[in-house]
Amino acid sequence: METDRKRTIYNWFQCYSPENLSAECVRNGLKVTGLYSDVAGAPFDPRSAEFAIVAESL
Image 1 (cartoon, rainbow, N blue to C red):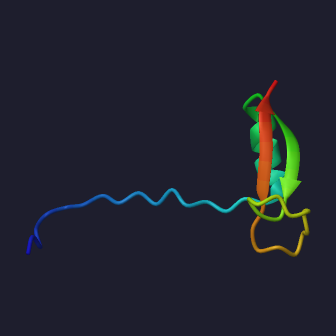
Image 2 (image 1 turned 60 degrees about the vertical axis):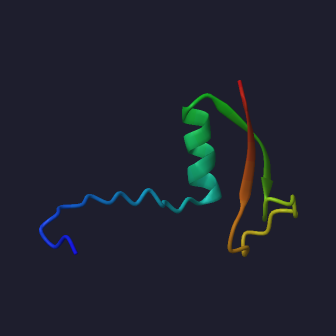
């Protein structure tokens, strides 16, 4: 065991709302063309535990 070894761990996990992610896309030159409740394309429901955005470059 290496008890004296220093390790740096980065956790890049971030939660977004549809509004936050849409704004992030626009700030970075993307146009949001779709908002769905999952990656299979179910119609968006704000009560969904997840969501998917489709974006394209401007």
